[in-house]
Length: 472
Image (tube, rainbow, N blue to C red; front, side):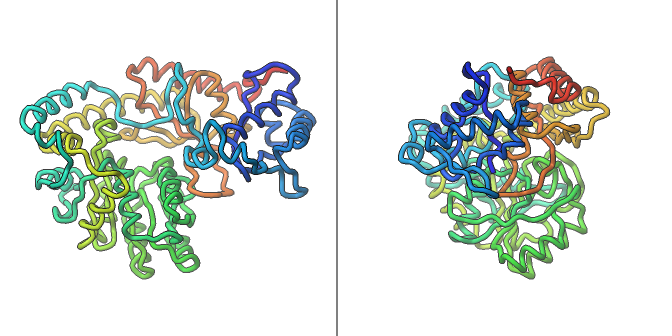
């Protein structure tokens, strides 16, 4: 079921006509794809502050227009037509892949819907290194990347290490960011039709990306400490997955940190059922948990992924994956096939940032800024139910009753603030409801904008949905 909501400010006229027009527009642009289920009438009425009768008249109108079909006991579904199978706007596949975020972020909004590293002036270091590369290696810039110099691997080995542990240098593959690393690993260890385990809420762009490759999603239960081993065992027994995508430290969006005994239990289950583990440590690398990584416990079946996007500079697209023995070469080739290849300029820039120590210096400065902003979060949201960490640039906020996740996201949008509702992180068709939103606080350049945006959200929460009313 979609979490789509109409924008009643976009047109004039009777409410039910405006709702019907918005449904038709969403179908024509692909935002409501063929086969999509419209929200139940009672839910939509509550979300936008109108009567059920108004929504019922709107649904009847779009049914009369031949856009939807109503099935008693099952709901209302978008019909397939030549027009909405290939619209001029966003096609249905693109609409499903993009999640709940707009394909292009609207201008003039405060962005709290991303967690890229805060701008602390890292462009100065990037400029210096880029200039040096252009002076010293002009021929490499003019050509394709055909060799992977050892210092690229050394940079990945250093960046992926945790405490005194480092992966083997022969296991390292430099990649065009962490996302490309994960997709490359999935391409090597699974085939179309294979199942991959995901938590109900997680970094869902991976599940969408793997679905595009023909892989299926198997959902596993988790709690405040991450994946529950007993349910992971159940999923392995019943669904026979080939791989599991996990964030063992600072999980996105729940911020769960998996304790060591649970990590070892997950590894033992994976070994029994021959399941590969993909460990995304993008946020975990900024958190000094002192707990061994899954890759440290089971390097023979774990792909450890990390990069620069959350702690140094997202625009650099620097990433690495440490692979199980004998698979690094396959992942390198798969990465080239799925990404088009690694640009020399970006790979050399990422390596020099790490090996020069500048990446560590930037990471520390970014972490200090994140810590200062997280303190602002704790002050403004005092008394509310949320999870945060001083070194992670987002919080997972429980909405007070009667707010719903999608409704609050829409209300925040009306206040010129972009946030993510829980559906953005759902890896599959989950019936679980968390009544939570994720608020990232790293994008604003100035702390003053952080304070302004968070204060607006706090006022919304205090006023409740009655403070966010649709026009009569």
